[in-house]
Length: 338
Ligand SMILES: C[S@@+](CC[C@H](N)C(=O)[O-])C[C@H]1O[C@@H](n2cnc3c(N)ncnc32)[C@H](O)[C@@H]1O
Image 1 (cartoon, rainbow, N blue to C red):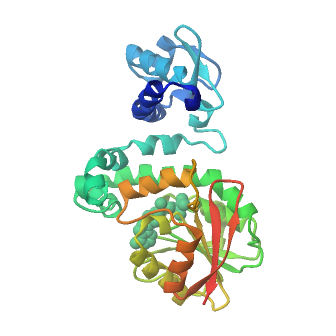
Image 2: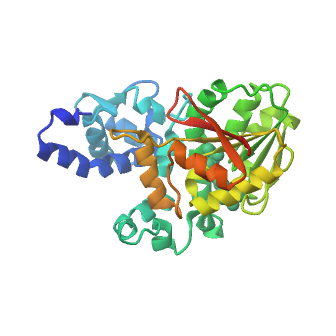
Image 3: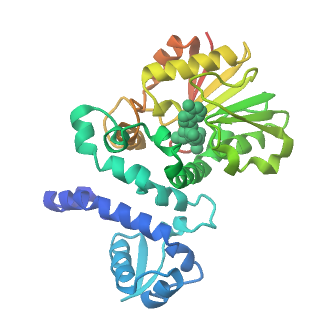
């Protein structure tokens, strides 16, 4: 994609305004598994449309635009191939972001994001404006279980990219009982347990989320508990991980969650909050995007600075030990009992 600094202001503005079209088209080609169809080599759009069961002219126009911004390659007019970027839309590559691409403009996100002007006015989330409730309550309604499955698959796909970086950046081998709070389908816990041979794990999430978890390879080393972290969390762990949990909630709700962890944990235990830590400086940072996603999608969720984490811990009976960066955009914010 063009380096915006070198573009005249009007072109920079047009690129920014058209950005949503790139995102939506990426999501659409991910739904139709177009990248999978190109894994053995480039195809002319008529063949690509036949293999993916899509409309020829529509696919040609979408692929021409996505190739124009460097996501696919148009090798000759009408013949399209993968680039290192679109390779990540394949389902069979390590670190695949295909499920994330599907989710990012699925109904659970696209409709609430469409209410951003209302969120900007009121401060209330997109799901409140669009669905009349928070997104996790909406997911649990029978009619939205398919959307919930899309969301959970995306979390796993996103997790796959950073879980190894997290597992490699902290010594988990000292723990014997690791509890992953809001652990979704279990990808992080499974990755950590591979580095902690003495430990058993507990995956904790809302009832119903864990059916699709990826932890079966570890047999009886992982137990699954369903419940709400606003009520209580499994007791007795010497390590509690919370990845992309705290950023979903307001300060008061985070204090409830973290206080429940503080109550349940072994007195010498460790709490690891895994998030994008907001820098206190200007300039680009992925935390600034994720923060606005939290504004759009959650009830008071946000990305926080190290100091804001220290305050949350203090209010929850915990104390900040330190922040461990990882080779990925997320950091590990470590706390212990106060
Ligand atoms: C943003 S996802 C993060 C999932 C996973 N930790 C990861 O990083 O891929 C938030 C998770 O919190 C779970 N969750 C939401 N409300 C919950 C509650 N009240 N109690 C337990 N888990 C909850 C969701 O089901 C979801 O799996």
